[in-house]
Length: 436
Ligand SMILES: NC(=O)c1ccc[n+]([C@@H]2O[C@H](COP(=O)([O-])OP(=O)(O)OC[C@H]3O[C@@H](n4cnc5c(N)ncnc54)[C@H](O)[C@@H]3O)[C@@H](O)[C@H]2O)c1
Ligand SMILES: O=c1ccn([C@@H]2O[C@H](COP(=O)(O)OP(=O)(O)O[C@H]3O[C@H](CO)[C@@H](O)[C@H](O)[C@H]3O)[C@@H](O)[C@H]2O)c(=O)[nH]1
Image (cartoon, rainbow, N blue to C red):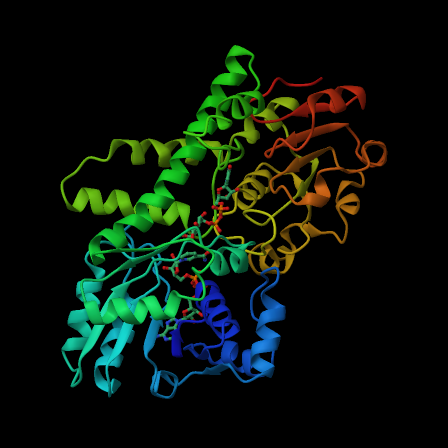
């Protein structure tokens, strides 16, 4: 098929590359001329494991092309993906200006039937708005379909190529046939394309993200209670996760959820609820608890140093909001580092992928180190914010020699309490007893 992808950010690039890999002819369109220039030079603009290989192959074999010109990109395309940003507006609702601008442009240039696909996460009613914006000027027939994306950063290729399900919202039989053809190669392993109307598809995306954010938040609250009653949240996770009605995934207590999706999508669903005069109380709690959870380690650090961080050096392992990505959007590490700096501490940091992005924000306010151990040299304590695999089995003896105090504040529960005890560390984690 001939496919156009408008917006070559995270989702657009994965969508375009994966559809090229399954034999389609894909044109990616982006307004960012520098980004397009880099891609035309064969450079992939994001870090995502496994995507580079597919990107290189499909560019080399001519199935994946790039342009800044919308009319060139959509020429003869049967489907046009809109993978554009939907950042939170001032009132928390998803800002549709990028999508509606492209929709308006499409109305002027569409010259044959095409299915326009909302791939971005957009509130209920957006497909109708996109339809109206195109229809204002369109001279040809077209359909607008809602097809939300469920991929996770870090495992995006696997999620896209082997989706648990594909959700398609359309009430047009013609568009349904096109969507079935489009997704046939991806769902042959037996996972379904679930068809529904546009509004239900739009809600499904917000319901999925909000449910997962709630699941994590529930475990974070259980963790907070575990600390008070003397129970271990990891045991609780194993104890309840084995119940197939609950499931093992997304039960890891920690330093709060971050990233480009959960925070903004929970907020946007709350805004939709308010718009429709519905008081969605669970969502409000999820947001409140997560706000506090992200700062959870700070009182422990302050308390350990008698509320005086001036002159102290805190080493930080992990900046990305989760492993296998360089994405730092809403990453818990960032606001904790800001608080440490504010309190007068010096901060040394290490992250295998995200340091370049953090340099753009913190500049020389922190010291960027080339190895995890370099960050520990003469530091008073270690804080951990991202569960990169290389942090899981470090050399504790070497760490103990580098650190001034053998103390770790772990926002990801990476270590066994027994190991920490044996190695003589003071160890704070989430929802488990303190080791001292
Ligand atoms: N990042 C994820 O993991 C993820 C997963 C599922 C869904 N989503 C949703 O997908 C959407 C896109 O997210 P993202 O992370 O890929 O966004 P992004 O900000 O990384 O990328 C968006 C791209 O759109 C481009 N753009 C803006 N205006 C344009 C225009 N007029 N014409 C062409 N290109 C234009 C930007 O230059 C940028 O490259 C959002 O709604 C997001 O909520 C994201
Ligand atoms: O048990 C868990 C699982 C996740 N997290 C945190 O939750 C956040 C989000 O993690 P994850 O869902 O893996 O990352 P995203 O790439 O943001 O993916 C989410 O957001 C995407 C954008 O909408 C959706 O497409 C995905 O389905 C959805 O999982 C991160 O801060 C994680 O550290 C936890 O704290 N505990």
